[in-house]
Structures are given as C-alpha cells and as structure tokens.
Image (tube, rainbow, N blue to C red; front, side):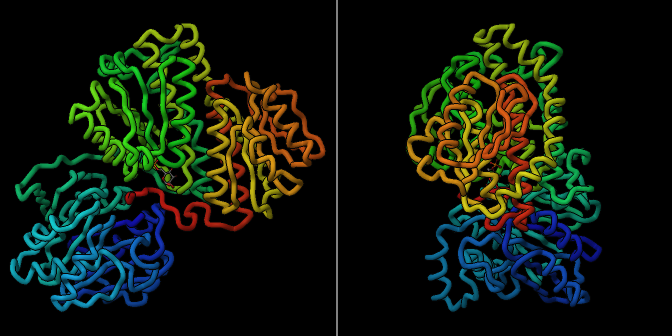
Length: 615
Ligand code: G6P
C-alpha cells in the first residue's frame, strides 16, 4: 500500500527520501514521486513503475533536487489509474501533500473546490487535501493551523505529509487510521509509514496516536491531539532484529523461508522450558485467560490460515470452541460474539485495516455492554503496530522484518505463538492433560531440527516445480490440520506465480473439484502420517483413477512411494500437532520455484501489497 517518507535536515535530503522509498517497496505500489523545496520552489518528480525510475529521473536533475526538506511517496492506486498525473506528491500552489489511505468524502469536497475555481490535474482523492490546505492557508497564514482546520473535514482513514514553500522549516504530518512514525535524529527529523524506511538514518522513533497532528522541525517535534500539545514517547529500536538485507539470497522470500527454523525456535523459546510452559509466560494475564469460554480469531490472507490451524488445536486440545473468520466479513455481518470471548487478532504487519476495524467493532460492542467479559489479544510481528497498541494482551512473533509480500516466516511464527497460546489457555483452565502438554513441549524443542531438515528439500522441490511452469491451474489437498496448509499453498502459488490455484479439504474432492481433474491438472497433496492418512490415500486414489498427476508431500513413514503419475517428496516426520509448521516449508518452496521459473516479481507480486492499510 502507499508509503510515505519525509525529511527535514541541514543536509541534502533527497537521497534519504529515495532510500526510504526503496525500503518501502515491499508494501506494494505502482508509481513513485518526491518533492523538495529548493530556492523558494517546489521541485517535483513522479514516475510510473519502480522507485528506480524515480531515482534515475532525480539523478538526471540532481542539482534541482538538493534540498533540506521534502516528502516522497509510493502510490498503490485506489482513485485513478497508475499514471504520472495521479502519482504523489500532489501540489496546490505552494502546498505539496503525500497521502496514504482514503478520503471517503472527496467527491463533495472536490465539487466545492471546483466551484471556488480550483482545477484538478488528477483523479485522486489526495488532490482535494492539497487544495483544501492551500485554501485554508489563505486565511491562517499558518501551515499547522491550516492542516488542523481541514483534517476534521476529511472522512476515512489516512496519514499525511505536508510541506509549504513559505515554511521551509516545517514538515507537518497527520495520523488518522493509517500508520505513521516519526524518526528522531540529531538536528534532523523524519517521517515514514514504516520505521523500516528510516533505519539508515535513525533507530529512535516516536509513534503517533490516531488523530495526532505533528509539527516536525529540524530540532523539535511538537505533537497535538484535539489542538492540545501532547507528549509521545520515543522508543529506541534494537537494530539487530531489523536487518532487511537480502544477503546472499536471490530474493527476500527465499531468505525468509530459510530463516524459519531460527525464527520459530526463537518464538517458541518465549513460552517453553524443558518440558512445560515457562511460569512467566503470559503470567500477568492468567485471570483473563482463565475465564475464556470461546475464542474468536480474526485475520486476513495468510494470517487467516494460521487462525484456521489454531481452531483445530484449540478444539482438540482444550475443547474450547473456536471460530475463525476473515476480518472483512466479520466486520460487517453483525456477528454473534458470546460473553467471555477471547478475540485473537493475527497479523504480521499489525496495520491491516480490515483486521483493525473488526477488532474495533468488537470493542465498540463490548463498551456498549452488548458483549461481556471480552478480552482482546494480538499475535503480531510488529510490536509497535496499531493492532498491538489496541489489544490488551500481546504475543510477539519473533520473525524479524519480513519483506517479501508473500508471508512465510511471519506465518510459521504465528503458528508457533498460537500453539503457545493454546497450551497456556489449556493449562490455566486445567483443560489439557499435563502429559500431553509436556509431550508437545518436548516436540517443540525438536522442531528446529525438523525445519532444518525440511529446508534440505529445496533442490528436489525446485526440480519438481518445472512440471508446474506451463500449467493453468493447480489443486492443493489436505485434511484436518493440513487443510489450512493446503489453502495456504494455493494462496502462495497464485500470489507469486499467477497460476490459478485452489485449496480443498480432500474429503470435498468428490463434491466438485474432481470434475476438473485430468492429466493436465497437477494436484498437490499434504500427507503426513496422522489419523487422516488412510482417508487421504482414498482421496488420492480418486485422482489417480482419473489420470490426475499427484505431487505428494508425505512423511518418511507414510508408505507412499513415487510411481508414474505420483511424485512423492518425503518430509521429516513430526507429531501431528506440529506438522502444519513443518509442511508449510515445502509449499513455500514450491510456489517460490514455480514463480522464479515463470519470471514473476517474487518479492513484489503485481497488484499486491504487504501492508494493506485500506479496507
Ligand atoms: C496482505 C499480504 C499478505 C497478508 C495479508 C494480511 O495481503 O500480502 O501476505 O497475509 O495482507 O496481512 P497481515 O499483516 O494482517 O498479516
């Protein structure tokens, strides 16, 4: 989604802006632009396509882009096609604006501004904001006041960066529903949608609250809420978990697949000692967890699939009912939430607009007394995100920065954190047998080894992936806890290779998808040796009989061997509960290698974004 970077300094800031945009590329975008104030003028450059096109254009005119204050942007089109005239910054006279989010009521505002004589050069909602500020500035002659005056007129969720030629020592920023962080330097300050953009220039950050408007100068930051000055703390980040370098890997996604054994082990280590949960794990929340009668998981995309696995875990290990729903549906269907529900929000970014709105909807209903005894919990990879700040309990996933749009290590660490939560709730409520708990904890200690061994499948899966390169469609099948992994396999393949793929509970095969099966349809099956294996083998026979080509990821002891139309790849055998984590690796490798073979943009697939900050 759109990314904002801004800077005010004594030095030339154009390279800081461009480097910041490059570091935001992972968010997904289709055009990029920047403006700096130099010699009493706005110098602006905008390009469709990659940030590199913008870098080249700016470098061709380097003298004009030397400035001490500027704003920059990557745009993910919402209003108006990806085109130069729609790219940000948008300018009205001496005002320039970059914007992330949506101004829902832009149409009546635009009509009003046209009547006042403003002309529009883009189809964006953002241009309205630039003109409104320019109009308000005519009266206030004060940029902060002008921004404060117009913000209440904008409906929607957004973040803004604003500069004005006559105020070259002021960078104004607004956070109202979209992420925005201030990077605190020495004699220089910065703004960005994600701190990642600013790590080359600072590791000290101030996180704005919703509704905050900040006046950022070279040597001061003033934050206002409802027109009153407020204090916002500065957090220092430990840079070692924020290494966003690709290293020797060809793509971030591949690097992130390889980081999973360590990331999962690190996440599990928060909660377990030799054979039990650590006494201090979620110790301060035991009272809330002890009264939970129902779990409601809310998430989107890959995180939703992690939630689906957790449903199997919660219900089979603790016998507590667990519902899982995509946040965008839950938010609008007026769902029943019973008393004493634990609302679990899963998100790698912690900024997904749908998940945040679904959470806020449950909080609104709890506040009005409609839901009693509700507790909210987030499992998230960004400790400073909106989601974490707005939930009562937080379990971090210690995956480190994930850059690839297709989530890998954030997913498997979510599963690790979810299993810790299941065990904790089970233990606090005496719903889980201590032998079962200790056997799962023992297996958790061995998980890193199993994941390391799964990484060794890289080359054999690369070889298999050639057989998918020219295919139009693929089915992924799994049963029980592997059903969500089948869904995740299909999502991954379509996200990055653009091959149509569907995930199915294998038992459903004969109720529809079997009609698609012929010799041209590859069918990927997840077949660990578990309680469902015999049923799954019967489903595979149904495919075999119709000449479908099977690609089976199976346990070493599953007694499944390759034949003419069945390719078996053996995956390390692990206990049934942890198998979804291990089987995530082969499906990630498969989508990765198919995408590389097809020459797609693996880390930044077309039309997708890493952090989806609009509904
Ligand atoms: C986007 C990303 C996915 C992610 C989904 C939910 O679509 O491309 O990888 O699974 O958003 O994001 P979240 O940050 O809430 O997990």
